[in-house]
Length: 596
Image: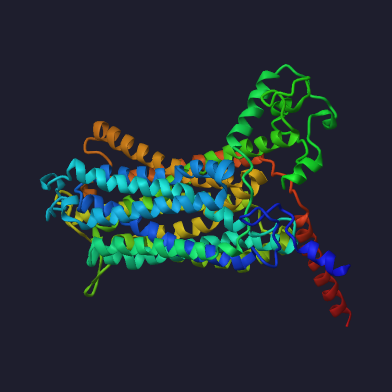
């Protein structure tokens, strides 16, 4: 009898199944065994992606002969597309194919785009002739329409592929831990930290080794290696298939949310009963059959509760269950937080554009070795790797004793720390650029755009701090949107965090074009020119610092009214009680020691 109970307890309680739809045992599938394949996949995939994106602005300016503003906008528009398409990937996964098959199909598109891109930088007929006059690109031959079509066609094919992989791979990883099992729940709390660790480990290789190869050996090998890395990463993911747990597609989240909003509007005059039990809701058995969870009614966004008021109609566009209404509320409650993440994502976009272009104007030689400007992005990686480890191993444990929160501090508090660091970053970037321009002026390098006699490492503080900011903001952002999304909309929740990066990059393009245009008209030469020695990036970065301050104020107002969703299981409560129990035990032990 005990054996049967143990066997029953071994089955997951969160509705996960194998690819054939059968219930799974936690001893056979999931956990860190399954996640090991996913984490290793992410190392190689991030190496592939950042092997392309980190140095893209230099390829556009030096090989396709585009100007600073044009090249920067092309980079941020492409990166923005990369981070916006996950909304589509999340929809397909949640509504139709499931996360696993959406990921597999998207990976085929991804590798196809990478392969064509490698050909585009390798074949002479697909790129313009080289040009030695880097400071005046107007004298260089521009890329033809065909060359641009092949290059950007491959880039955007790659972007479509990542739209299916990005929102699903981290979600698949988080799905390997059962929320109804306290030990597995505690592992999930650390998963996102180590997930980001794997991302930036791959990024570090791309920003050091691959960018050096691209600058010093050639773009053919520099792009072929990321393509090979992507092929390896997909193979590693597929090798872990027998160990994965899967969530069953729960239907289109957009349709379910639309039904709630339409039903609430159509019944806007209906009175909401005082007793929530009078609202429409399905039986627990209905949810249990589908591996879903029932959610109780909450007082927030009360207008939407009208969708579950019974009026005699059973039309799904007139009557929605309480759970469906609450799922919609959860997704809508996160939108103000989503909006507060756009500005820091815009700051992140500068690291692969203007920060890198700044590096090309500085002294980069150490003996006979010449530092690739894009390799400074590797210091973001190093800083984040160190910060994540210190946070997970020391800060969390220290804060747990004080706050009794299993995460140490709340996710929103962690994000707030990251926003403060972004203000510091742009302030330092502005002061550093002001100093660089003063040295350029002293040496008569303003007009000719010559190399400024300052080491490239003067840019190091802004890169290192960006890594620290990411350890707080980016990790918490991914976990927040996953954690706060309803169980049936996890992929869509994950795509929220990616959408912030997409909008942030598009916002960067908009601000760069707008500021460049306005300052050329009203500030004579303008703030952002092809010749950075004649530009005023210090003003531009100061503008960003002010924008970050305003965004922080907005964030603090928003979180004051935010209500965390209720846990569907008692795992968090169990972990919290364990922490309190540990504190009591330590206190009792100290008292007994004092008596002796």
